[in-house]
Length: 579
Image (cartoon, rainbow, N blue to C red; front, side, top):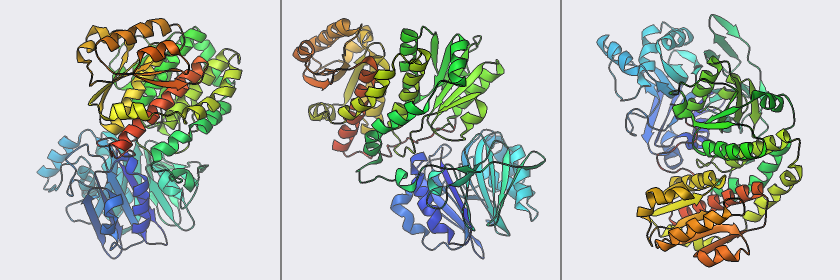
């Protein structure tokens, strides 16, 4: 779960790699390193963020180079465990994203054959395997080395006596950018946008020889052709645009994101397949899981379609008969657990659908159908606009399955998202900022909204937050309520409104301060809560979207008040490409 960048061309490689790695820090930022090739192969590795230590790379020379920004999986974050890793001679360098599952066995065998290791990482075995098979042709050595690997990898390799970069991919993303007299490789397109919009997405099993003039891609026993894609995003889309943080910029982009995503999804083969499937199973992780849970409530309410929602990380351990359509929801399209779940579904001959934000990502090659969420690049680790884009897809699916009965609502709700951006949350922010623990509660489709609100609060403010179905608090969590434990209660009109009021009174009786999120002018709710956050009158769709945005803003402003590192919260990475 790291970011890699490679460059070969007519310019000095190190400055280009440094800027590319800074774009990839959302994938990992506990250490970084760069290797360049001039007359010799030189490496520089450093614990800490490249954005704070880029001066360490200023002396690296050469027009060929590879770099890495790390999120630790094997070994603590330090200089030795940072990539690139080299072989015993120091003449072969490797950067790697993924996990080598059989690394312990390989490490043991390599040591027995005389190899000396300097790190605790799984990646270092790749450098030593390449060393064993190197006889002057780096491509042949890499091709042989990867036959010994089990697990996931996106690898870039260099050798002192070979002027090329060799790239290999299996179950981890890798994209090559085609510039003018230069080529770049990276974990995703964001480091490439300053230099080109022409890209080639490598597929599982691909090995590419990268030189300034050309790319040659092999898969199996011979060369293959991969299509060239044009990326629509521009460089400014990946910059802050005057906002203090990427997260708040991306929150304010949500009205447009919702509109464009919903407008792009029309009746067609995917919707026809849903009408015919009989039932659906959604598999996803984190924020995507919460979006899928909201869809379950709405699809069963409006379309009478049975829907199951499962955590992708647990799905492979289930052995029930699979039927109907299996839908994998993943912002990056590279989430390892979701990919594994879709592969399992295909083994049972289920129709599969991938919902993702990334063109030509791994999920799009596995699933029978793909829907793109069109959120554009999301840099902040905490997902916001990708969540709203997923909801745009799900709400439009419900509209289309109902033969456009919700068309007027869909045309209106993106403006209600704009309204929610202007709501005063200072009282709620002050209450949360003083707390060590916060509960988020809701019923029906507002229960997963509460789960998502709690996730946002804990991941960027570091305040312990839990989301609950409001009726469940009396089954244990009531013991934790006190005057120091605020409760954010989602109480909007609907079938659960009356019982939700009763739940709020029960929590209030235990001394908990209540922050109520409801419809402005709701006097009954205002009378029983301590802080009222009023939303404009709205349809259920609008209530879900506006309350979601309000909770994003609540987490953001609380984290900002506490001085947290909002875009890069500790211990987290944006794209979870390992299981």
